[in-house]
Amino acid sequence: MTTVLDGGLSNALVARGHDLSDDLWTARLLRDAPDEIAAVHRAYFAAGAEVATTASYQASVEGFERAGLDRAEAERLIVRSVTLAREVRDELADDGGTRVVAASIGPYGAMLADGSEYRGRYGVTAARLRDFHRSRVELLAAAEPDLLAVETIPDADEAEVLVGIIADVGLPAWLSYSVAGLSTRAGQPLEAAYEIAAGSGLVATGVNCCRPEDVLPALEVARRVTGLPGIAYPNSGQGWDNRTHTWTGETAYDVGLAPRWVAAGAAYVGGCCQVGPSDIAALADLVTPS
Image (cartoon, rainbow, N blue to C red; front, side):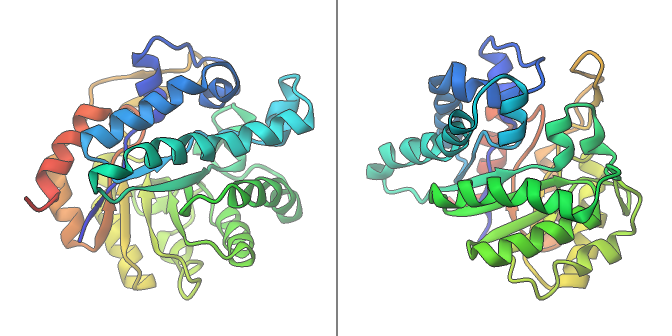
């Protein structure tokens, strides 16, 4: 059975007319336009997605405080990311579909808003990473999502910290790396990176926000090393310009690749940046039994 994930939150919000060029990115709309985030969750469910990924990827107490919010408001907005998705899920419950909420936990580099989420190797200690992630993981878990989506992780060292925190929290979780070929974005071999997930209790492991052509080789390594179900939700394959906060080039996202991902063990498939509701609708038509 294949579960269809949603697509990119940011591009769907931009398509609705929002400027996301500030450092908070989509997290800003948790404060300024929460109804718009809910509308995107609703659009992806309507397209056939079975998972709503919350608007918490770039949300952290530290990031919100840097933008001028106090700690109490920052914590409230992080919790709101889950509440919004849960409310949309619950309003659609009468139609009989199975839908879940995945609380997004992005990398430390996302808070820095300098492109380091695609490089890793932040130059900080494991203790610093542990302190940063633990507070927001606990906030998100307390808001009662169905699972945790540890995503776009560029660095195996950061993944190791997060896997330990998640084990303490006790919620189901997946771990997906951002990769370049057969290495993490930080340059570590995927064999070693996925060993962190082996025996960890995760529900799935794989890749996201990578080029579509990088998905299959990474899934094959993940399955061989961990034995876990796979997860695959690449971006469009376009290039990201951190200076202008824009994507360049043509899309390479092709739902026709998804059956090969499923054959390689992917139990969860979807899209990331620049993959929209129409792409998810086409994906759902392809992989969901009629």
